Length: 130
Image 1 (cartoon, rainbow, N blue to C red):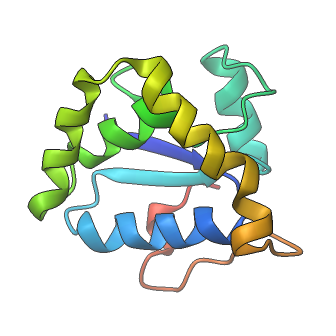
Image 2: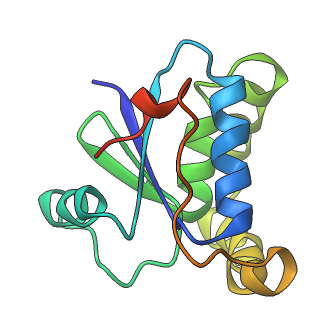
């Protein structure tokens, strides 16, 4: 099963991150859904993920990861030097998540947000779950 990344569809930083992942994942291991979408909400229910998590979420091999753990596990399947970032999982999660949460809490202020979720370009539309 491919990994599924749930992201904040109105967050500019999150959307830029999805575009980055797509470029570094040319084999298409990851599929995407916004947290605001119907499929995103169904996946939260299916995997019993709390709805109040303000984080990128990775569902992979029937497990889910949030915050810094999700980001680092995503790196594991990217091409190039980005795989090496996975090694940062040796840092205790509370320390990693402390820094992750600084970005998460300020993402709208620093990067802005959209009025609605992004529409994927035709060449990558199949990577987005509906």
